[in-house]
Each structure stands twice: as structure tokens, then as C-alpha cells.
Length: 262
Image (cartoon, rainbow, N blue to C red):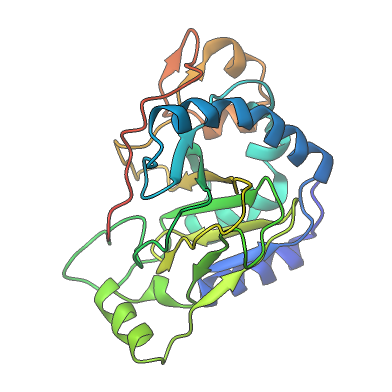
């Protein structure tokens, strides 16, 4: 049933349309997020051992999550409220296209301001939303351990316009503190950046990508084990309909996905 009624979801979608993101506070169970963190730690370790400089900038790691066990929990990937908001702003019957994490560690730096995808059309105004990122941390996030820094309303501007407004001080940079259980839904065209983690504890941030059914980015996908897919409820399974099916998913992925300065 979800936590929110239809009117509340409508209001959250309206806030999203204005700002380009919305935060649902204390949305996922804290105990479940702690379990995700425990399951994530052995997936991060090999990447750190292999590349001490990080694979997404200094001491920052992009780590794909295997779609199995906790990471295939339909109560998370098909949360009624999250999907309800996604459908309101990015169209009915969306697809899930990404399951991964971003983790800055001690020694990480500011990322460049960027967007996660280019516009659909270079020679036309920005379109309605077509791809969203759902982010939730596996630790409490404050000013010390690398909060996401973002801007409001830049999903409706070109990157050049957004950068000009930010540099002129007409748009403010805003850091978003988050607690375990908080969930952020954002338009991937919103201008944002990662910030440094000044602590000795990694700060993993999960990203689940949802997009309109017709939008495909070949650099991101989810390998879905057939036995896991067979055990999902119908709505969750439908979200994954365009992803490749495999007999067994990898535990450690070759992280060739990179963010570009769109």
C-alpha cells in the first residue's frame, strides 16, 4: 500500500517537477539499510584492493550490485511510493535500468559539476523527465562524509544555462544530508556533484535507475538471474523486462561505466 496516499504522491511529484528532486525522509527501514551495508562491504573491498586511486575519481568507487538476495528485494526496488512518484513524473510503466553504488572514501575530492545524461535533443528546450535516479545511503550522511551537492530547477535548463546561473550566484548549491532510510528521487539532468569524504568510513550511496520504457542507455543495465526473476511479484518483474537474463549474476563487475560531464 505504501506510506502515502494518492494526494500526497501528487504533491511530492509536483515538488519534483519544480525542483528536480524530492527527498522521502525515514522511508526505508533502518534495520534493512544496515543489512544492505553489511552485504555491500565485501563487494567494495576488491575494488579498493585493485585500485587504491578509485575508479570514479580519487578514492571514489562505482560498484555495481548483483541483483540477488537483499539487493533484489521487491520492497525496495518496487516500493509503491517511489514507483508511484516515478510514474507521475516519468510516465507510466517505467523500466528499472541500473543498480549500483557511489562510495567516496578518505582522500576523495569534489567532482566537477555535471549531469548524468545529455538532453534528448541538442537543438530543443529541455523535455519532461525521462530518466530518474533513486538514491539512498547505507550510512548517515552529513557535511563530513560526502553529501551530494545539488541545485534546484536545473533539470529544466541546458547544462550551459545551469552552469552560468550557478556561477553567477542566481542558483544556489545545496548539500543534502541524509539519514539511513532517507530516499532521494532526482532527475538525472539536474546539475550536481559529489563532495569529499573527510572521515575514515566509506559512504556508500545506492542508485537505482528508472526510465521511460522507450529510453535505453547501453552503458547501464542489470543482469537478472532467471531464478530471481521467477520469484519476483509481477510488477517488480515487469520493471526489469528489458534487462538481460542470466543463469547467475557476477559478484564483482568490471566497472567500465563512467560519469561524463554532460
